[in-house]
Length: 353
Image (cartoon, rainbow, N blue to C red; front, top):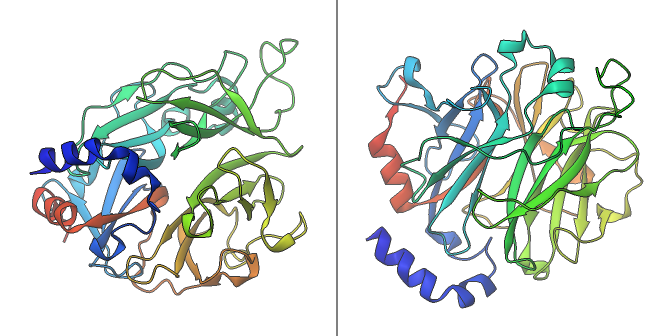
């Protein structure tokens, strides 16, 4: 059944791409899948929502119903550790790619200075036809040249202008005059590569280098405002807060702060927690005018949830309570599920009691 649906989708791809991807069949969505890594295990863990409730009732998935098997995907390539997972779906809906940072901080005794000097320059990829069954992990070729020290927090989105996936990530580049990389750290900047198959990649291109270090970019396409309207959230590594911008001419377009905000403005609802980072954004399944923004942080080592009904004002985000909300769940992504996907995940995996 899934194969025939995908063949039909492929046959009508030119029409499907033209539809607003964030709104199409929104009423078919019955729940959410949340992928993340816990602070003490650099692997992909997954939570399944209680129907379309995005706030409480999340169920931890495992293979046997115990926490011993709650790592749904564990990397056996590269550093053998992964963080910062993100899922992108092909335009025809028939393939899903989960990508993640190739970083095993535990093996480095959590020496992030070393990891940013001599870290992995590749990312880890899994593929799935249905968000239920996943391939084995594979390591990409290096996305940057050897002068870089790290490739962190990759996020992939479909760029309809390029007819390719664009992967945005953070990297810092070291001077050839400092071969041992013992000097001051250069700033992380955002770069991107493009791909059509997550096996071969373009050369890296500078994406966002504002003159201070930035990392952890996440994106939302909002086609009801125009076919090329995107929003993005980025972490500043100066004040360790997240800010929000808008583009009217594509994900590689010209970005401005939402609502004409000054460059100093930040999203405030998680300010009381240290080191705001790893934002994730998703639209509500039931109410498409409601947006959910979760911000990772270091005080509780988990996400803090917020929501808003406009994307054009950083002050509009309101923090939500933590009662019943997932804990110790770091940098990941939430994706909407249709009935077949929700049922398939519920059948294959067991809920940790």
